[in-house]
Structures are given as C-alpha cells and as structure tokens.
Length: 212
Image (cartoon, rainbow, N blue to C red; front, side, top):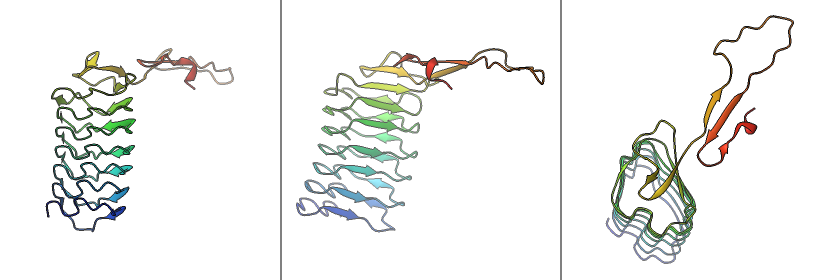
C-alpha cells in the first residue's frame, strides 16, 4: 500500500518478495537509515517518492521490466553511489535523482527517450553520464548544481546531442580507424609489419599509443 514503510527509521535493509508487481508511491519515504534494498524481477512499477529522502541508501539495481521511474523516486538519497538502470526503461520523471550528492557516474540506457526536469539537480559529485543511445527528450534544468567537471559521453553514431546536452558538454566515445588496405596480401616466409591503427576521442584526444 501507499506509504507502507514510510518513516520507518529503524529499517536498515529490505529484500522484497518474489511475485511483487509494484512498489507504491511513498513506500519507503523518509526511511533515513535504509542502506540496501533488493527489488526482485517481476516488479513493473516504482511509484512517485518511493525512496524519497532515503539518505543512507548506497546502491540500487532496477530490474528489467520497469519502464519508468516516478517523480522524485530517489530525492535526496545522499549516500547513493551506484545505480543500475534496466534496458526496458523509457522515462525518468521529474527530479528522480535530485539531491543525490554522492552519485558520481550513471549510465542511461538506449531505451530512455525522456528525462524530466531537474532529474540530476544538485547532484554535486556527478562527473560522468554515459548515454547508450540517441539523445532523450528532456525538460529544463537537468544538471543545475552538478560538478563543473561533469560531461556526457555518447556513442559516435548517436544523434540529437550536439556540442552540449542541456548545458552539459558532450564528448564522443573513442573512434578507432585501421591503417593500410582493407585486404592485406602477405607472402609466406616474409616478415609481416602491422600497419597499425589510430584512435581518438573527445576526452583525451589522440589515443593511438594505447591501441595494441
């Protein structure tokens, strides 16, 4: 039910039962000492404010099948460092990770096509957002208050980003180009010289020395 464990200040951990279909809104609202929770496969919905102000929650794995995270799902989960989002996810609603001040890096699956306003507002340690696909549609102020070092990393074939995404600088993942002909003919008994390859990316520039 809505608010099932709201304000349970002595709750440290929770393993939700198999067969559970939804986590209702406010379910763990202000469980300030909750450090860990297991969400089983089969859960299809996480309601608004479900983990609002769970300031001790350190990591969360969202299972496949969930298509949206509700408004302020993890609002001010200040200890949250590790987040795993599913390949079925389509929407991050308003302020999902607002105030998650320990979050450093997060990967946005290719399936996500919408990110609500202030989704990462005041995520002061956030420096790396990895986008698996094309640029999702978004509302305002996604990244206000994030680290000045924050960057969006995207695949070289992704569309819709440009030089900035909601004000965040966009860098391309490495592009590797092989040198020489596409077909190499080599006579037996002679020494072979590898023509090599070149690699560049938007973060570090020339990576050729690292290509083996």
